[in-house]
Length: 291
Image (cartoon, rainbow, N blue to C red; front, side, top):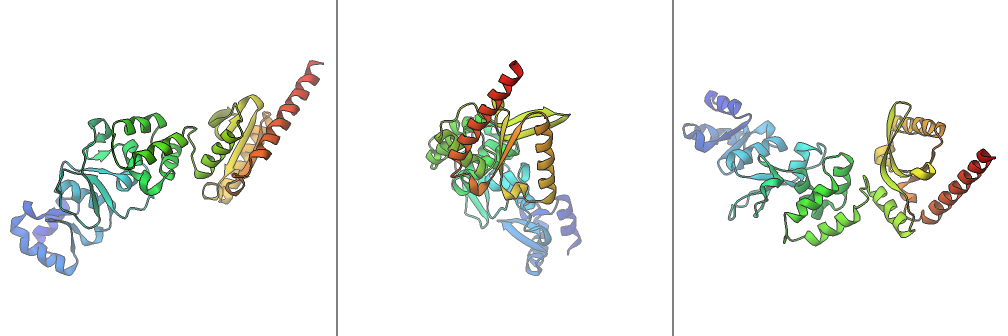
């Protein structure tokens, strides 16, 4: 590669703009023909070995348009969801921008409150992910503590009139008990359908110096329901950790009931029966103590 082009790439962290280096126009063309450079946007090139990197494609976009605001999957991957697959980089840009392969332009400009630098805040990222990923985006963001439900509602309030807002509003309403997984979301629906009261989600307790978060808890009954989705509980270490926690909780008078994701949808009658049995058990214990 041409030494000056190499130096320009180093200075640009793998990105070079043709308009900033008119003297390298021929060297850039030759590097593109050999695959040493890849054209990402008009006049913006990335080193060939970095062309598939989301970070470098975003860097190329911001070099190309310093007012661009990255959102959706690319922004989430770079800020709080590092393993999220990204097929297209979505960004808010001024109207009438030329289409570009691998990029999707959102035309409206978000409110300043929803932007940090050249990246949408996580709340707006999640709203922009909902039409493609559905409620899964909310579950992940809540579980990773990237957003709050109140923050999501605020972001929706600041982006009125957008296509898909009816879906976004419905998903946020269904998320009112802050599920951290699709199975938990379904279990919350079951509890609401059964009109069970007194339950809390992601309930924090501290026992023997350890802090635990319970998927669903009825604190007055010291009763916990854990929803064991395979993706979060499928390893041997997770299995052992969960059982160790159950033992500690049992020592402090808590009963833990575990349901697999597949068992959740028709669990209503069984859950109600467990709650009734637990309440009866505690009443008997109190009577014995009172004697």
